[in-house]
Length: 374
Ligand SMILES: *Cc1c(COP(=O)(O)O)cnc(C)c1O
Image (tube, rainbow, N blue to C red):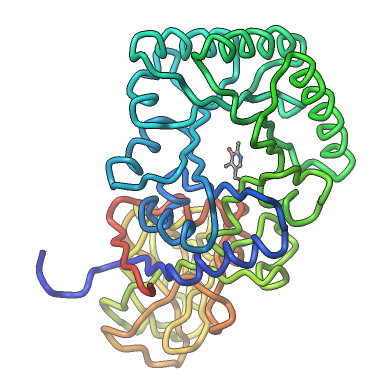
C-alpha cells in the first residue's frame, strides 16, 4: 500500500471501548460480563475490540458463529469465547479443540456436540439457550425439560460441562421483558431440577442490562454499549456515561459551484435553491452509507454541519455548502462522538430510518480501519 492517506476510514478509539466496558461493569455490577464482538465487532474490528474489552474487565467474549470464534482464537486470544448460532453441519470438533464454548439451542444440537466430544476425546463446554419468547434461536419451552435432562446425563458421563443457561429478550416493553424473565426463571428451575448448576446465567443484552436490573442475573451480554452507542433510539449514550468509539471520516476530493435550479446526483432529487458550492465526498452505499439517508443525513466539514444533497450513489455523495468555501482535501466527518460537535451514528440512523447498530455494522469492505489509543 502507498503511504497516502486512505480514501475513507473508520477511526476506532480503543480506549473508548475499554472505558465503556469499565463504565458498564461498574453500572451493572454483575459478576460476569460477556463482551459481544460478533459481526466483526459491530464493524469496529473483532480482534482489536476483543483486546480492548478484555482490558476493560470483560471476562468472556460472545460471537454469533464458530467462524467468528475461530478468528479470535487464530489471533491468539485465549479468553473464554461463546458462540451460539450454528450451521446444521457445524464443526463442533474443531470448536471443542479450540476451547470455544458452544451455545446449544436444540436436542439435535446437543447430540451433535456430544458426538463431537466422543470423537475428539475431550468434553465440551456448553451454554443451553432457552427461547423465552423471542421466537428465534433457543430450545422451545416444551423441549426444555428433555434437553436439560439429556445435558445432565452427558455431564455425569463427563462429555459436557453445562457452564451456562441463557436466553435473549425482545425489548418490546418492560412488561414483555418481565414476562420473558418469568419464563427464564421457570427454565432455570427446570434446569436445576434436572441437576444442572450453571456458572453463568445470562438473559440481558445492553438494553435490559442498563434498565432492567431483574434481568441481570450474574452475567450480561453487552454488545452495542461497548462501542459507545445506545441500545435505545430515544436515549443518548452519554446518559449512560458511554462514548462512541468509531469516527467515519474521509476528505473532499473535488469542489464546484452550481447555479440556482441545477440538479445534483442521480434523479436530480436535489435542485439548488440559489447558487451554491458543492463538495464531492468519496463514500457511498458500497461503503455502508445508507441510500435511505439520501438528502437527509448530516456531515461536518471544517467544523460546520451540512446535509447530503440528493441521492447517495454507490461511491459518492455530494454536500451543498452554500456560500461556505470548502477546499479539496478538507476533512469530512460523517459521524463520531457528538461531544466533539460531529453527527452521531444515531443521527445517521434517524436520517436513514434505522438504528445505530446498523450504521456501524454495515461499513463496506473499502473502508479502512485505523486504531487509536492503548
Ligand atoms: C447481538 C446479541 C447480543 C448483544 O446485543 P446488544 O443489544 O448489542 O447488547 C446479546 N445476545 C445475543 C444473543 C445477541 O445475538
